[in-house]
Length: 111
Image (tube, rainbow, N blue to C red; front, top):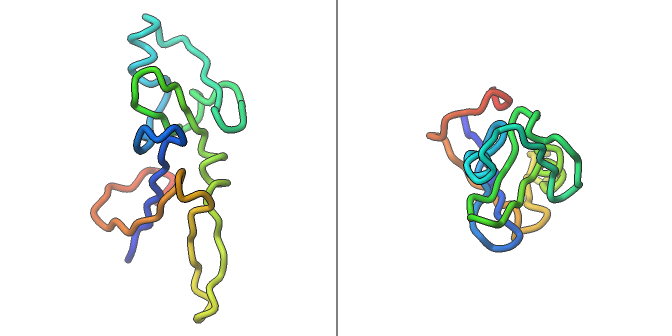
């Protein structure tokens, strides 16, 4: 079987966004508390720290956070002409890339 992994890059070109749960450690250390509310940088939805997982830019001072709903929306799904196989394309190549990765551990929502 093949596992498809989507890598999302920071639109400010800081590298790949990292999946995290809750408030990222750098925010906790900077503010001295974990009682912070985060908003999605793409849709401005509040309290994304309560989500199962968010995507966070690890570069200090960037503060770009992406909720999974927006991440899903950045990827297009369409049927290819050959046998009806599902073809996955990144809607914005600067934000999302698609790669096959059989050795990566699966997240709970992928099972």
